[in-house]
Length: 128
Image (cartoon, rainbow, N blue to C red; front, side, top):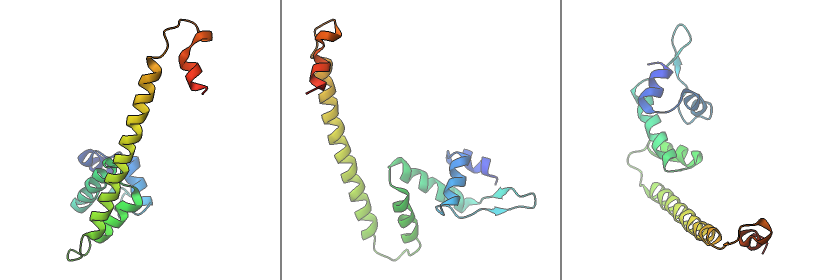
């Protein structure tokens, strides 16, 4: 299949597919006689895997590691478990930071009963 078909099947833009090839996340596509890239079912599977990992905000270097460990089906999945635990911890930290940010913004949004910038409690709070 051509890159446009792969993009449609996997919901990954053509440009991103080419980028993944450039950084060796996706194997370089073979070329047919007219120079068009040709992809197969394994490319579809790999690209869906990559897309799902990116949706989980797993960094590209970590995705490369996940792809690599998949090559040995009998190896222990400690590395995979550890990677997911780290990612979960990162997400939890981000949630905590965003929760604090939301509280701060809410407090600011409700602290100013004044109508003029010269008396604006929000601006005064931001200067402290």
